[in-house]
Amino acid sequence: MGCLCSRKCRMGKLLAWLQMVLGFLVIAVSAMSLFRFYSAGFFWHNDDICRHFYRPANAYVGFDLKAMSERFEEVLDKLDQLQEKLEATVQKIEKNKDGLSKANITMLEHKNYLEVEVIRPLYSAHIALRQIRIPKAEERNSTVKEDPLINYFIVEEIRKYIAMKKNRFGKTNIYGSEGIYNTIGHTCVLMKKELEEYMDYDVGAYCNDDWNLAQKLMISGCDPLPRRRCLTRASKLFQKPYAINESLWRIPDGRNVRWSKYQCRNFDCLSSTNPKRGYSKCSGCFEMEKEKIKWVGSSSLPMDFLIKDVLDTKPGEIRIGLDFGVGTGTFAARMREQNVTIISTSLNLGAPFSEMIALRGLVPLYITLNQRLPFFDNTMDLIHTTGFMDGWIDFQLMDFILYDWDRILRPGGLLWIDRFFCSRKDLNDYMYMFLQFSYRKHKWILTPKSADEVYLSALLEKPPRSI
Image (cartoon, rainbow, N blue to C red; front, side, top):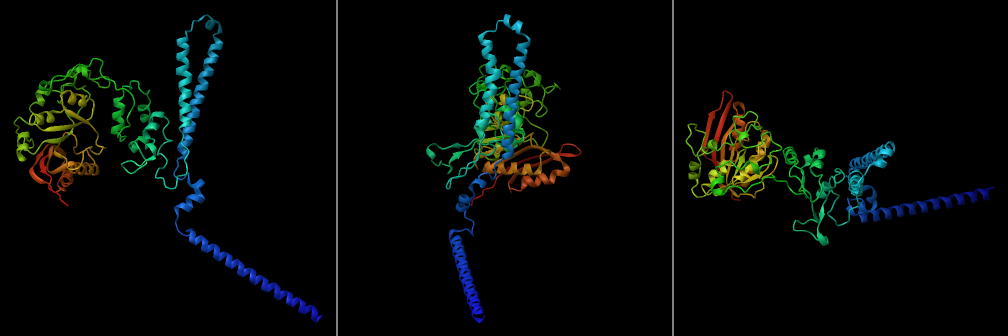
């Protein structure tokens, strides 16, 4: 009995020791594994490890699956419409077998039917399917990422435009990137239908007569617009413009304007006496007799500055400038007579302002308030503004615009605020915006416009800012 107990005790001790040894082995292996994981960087953020172990899942992070699903739905809808159209055509042929056997359908008509009703829809759906981008895992050292919005648009030309253009031979370009993105404003995403209509054309053919659609997109913030690969339309009756010595103060030939998108069909209709002229800003801008007296004729109103007096402020220093407003280029024409080159901003707000400026032999800059001015820092001698930015403008937007003007105006350059008006209760806010840059005041005039509104005209000089 005692012998049996002794054997059991020895066996129990042996098993206990064996369990302890196995336990120590487990602890040792675990410690070594933890050490190897720590050495490899698994307890720190390591992009190489994450990319290696989680590539299949992470490849889809940030990818717009909803947009891709919508693209598939659009393609399927196109194919369904094509199928329904073809089935309806077959049924129509079945009902008119007798008449069809007697009809003479030419090969050209048959060809046109196939091209328009069959081949073109199939091609569109085919291209849309082939251009759906499935995200790829990024290469370890690549800075190239998936094209933004690539699956949002379905029209082939807009997709080609926004897709990144990789550098040839895989080289890094002068910007330090592997390719170039053509830009579109983010509001374009909210105006997908209009933008796709704008970019839906036949490459190499004539563009649609849709400049008004383009302007609508620009004003709504879809700016800058994509470039297009179609031929711009011009007036069918385009004539040689007048010589520069007479074009400045003569109404241009109306045959040089495409009038189809305006209420008026000629320059006479744009008279300020016509209530149906189609525009409200800059009334009288298309009447040369009224335009000729601006900025040169004497005025009894103190807020009307003369060009001669402004140029005498900085004799010989004003050479180039910007006229930011709505007009037909009269300010630029008067400054040209003083050997000063002025670029005039323009939008065709109900009338052909851009065409009028160009036909007078001046330079129109087709731009909206949304866009940063396309000039380098400290380059302009003069910025003149009138008739456009008044008390309707948002304070923060006004602030961004003024800082952009300050950016392009050179030290010693002049900011000419011409007949800015606002409500009396907002005057202090706008005055602060104009004065925040510590410009020197050459002229500063406040004049009542009405019981509730005031005019502000000012001539300010940008101070030197050396760092």
